[in-house]
Structures are given as C-alpha cells and as structure tokens.
Amino acid sequence: MTKTPFRTLLALSTAVLALSGCSSLQDGMGAMKDGMGAMKHRMMGDGSSATATLDATKGNTAKGTVTFKQHGKHVMVHARISGLKPFGEHGFHVHEKGDCSSGDGMGTGGHFNPTAKPHGPQDGDHHAGDLPALKADASGSADVRFHLEGVTLGDGGPTDLSGKGLIVHVGPDDYKTQPTGNSGARIACGVIEPTKPAAAAKSGQHVH
Image 1 (cartoon, rainbow, N blue to C red):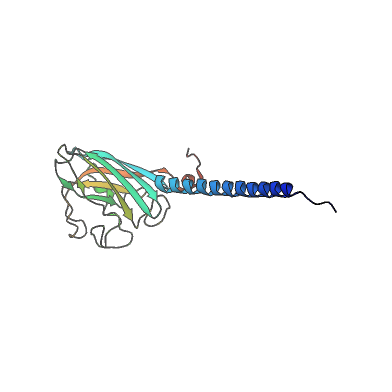
Image 2 (cartoon, one colour):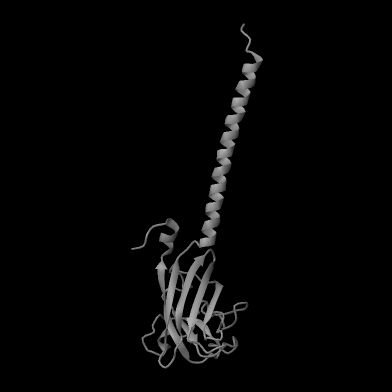
C-alpha cells in the first residue's frame, strides 16, 4: 500500500482551506454589496414622487416649488417659497381639490381630511392636509423640509396626496380653530402632480 507523503497532505489541506476562505470572502462581499444597496435605497427614497408649483393668487406675490417623496411609511416634503411677508408665519395646507383656476385658491375646497380628524398640529389629531407652518426669513423666503405620517403618494388610496391642491395662507395657523386654523386668505395655490409613479420607482423603469 502506497503511503501519501506528509507534505502532499499538508499541501492539499492548505488548498482546501484557501478555497473555503475564498468562497466565504465572496459570500461576505456579496452580503456587503446587498447591504450597501439597501442603505442607498433607503436614503434615496423607495416610492413615488410629486411636485407642486405654487403660483400667487390675485393681488399676491407668494410663489415657489414643493417636492414630495414617498420614503417608506413617510412622505418627505421640501418647500421653497418666496414672496412671503418678511419674518412672517404662514399657514400651509393640502386641500381636497386640485383646482387653482378661480384665481383666489378657493377652487381647492377645504383641507384634505379623508380620515375625518379635527384640525390640529402634527403631534396631535390632525387633517391629512395639515402641514407645519412656513416661517419666512428677512427676504420673505422660506426653505423648509419635513416629513408627514399617515399619508401616501401615488398609490390611489384614500390618503394619497397626488392630485390634491396645495395652499399657502396669508397668516399663521393657530392649529385650534375648526376646521381651518384661522390662517386667512389663500395667497398661493398649486396642484400636487405625480412625477414618478410608485411601480416604476420600485422596478427602476423609465416613465414616459
């Protein structure tokens, strides 16, 4: 019976360990790549998006752009508004109808409220359309970011913000007076228009 030299056995064992280590390394690299992809996915947002272009109503100067992005269970909002009262605070709401044709913003109807909640601040019971107030700087501009809970974007459900009106009011919202917050006249009006449907966002398809 031929005996296998000790050195040969040692070489074979080393080769097996090396191959095993290589496989484990490849698995580890694959898992790391998947993890980085998931992190990027969460950071960039994983749903549909929309934009509202705000135009001044008759006799007013407020205007701007507001972007919306579904991010998990939240909708992220970025509002950039100019033409406001310097250092002023302004009520800011999503309204039930996407119609700014009247020139005074009244075509948007009342606050978007599909869950029949009272008007209020974000940390209490509130309309789906109740947003944090806009606070202008010395130049009459506001650049704010916030996230909304309890609403969706582009899913066609009862709390979907797509197609709804967006209004800036002349005065501050007291978050108490029902059902409007007593924030006065509507000085800017826009419609929340979908820019990236959720199905296409998840699949990576281009929207035509």
